[in-house]
Length: 151
Image 1 (cartoon, rainbow, N blue to C red):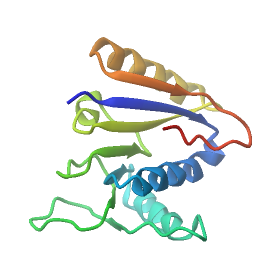
Image 2 (image 1 turned 60 degrees about the vertical axis):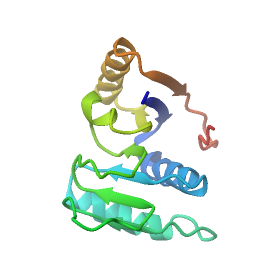
Image 3 (image 1 turned 45 degrees about the vertical axis):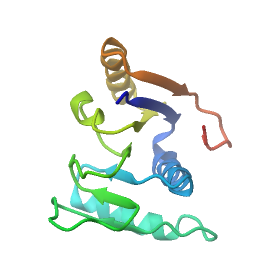
């Protein structure tokens, strides 16, 4: 399986809203999505945002802190740290993840924060490492007032 990485440019203040839009986009396509955060608090915040960010849409989801023995029925899972849950083909990264972790998914969405030089540099290094491994890469530039909803 070849992993496709989508590097989406956004501002720090808009990141979580763009993240929710990306989760919604993949959910509407019928794909199962795993959202990885860096803490329980961040997972709880995203849980709340997924319930409230868009009035007309409903995204069934669940916060999961550890691997479970029973299959998950929810199409979207939010985890507080990198955790591979089989059956989820799309990763949306709210936090830093490794290339090894990314390669468990057919598609990975990563955010390039245009107003954070350190995070931008981390994104460049991840892009270079992914390119060296032969992963498919797509860059989605920042456009004010336009949420990225690439295909």
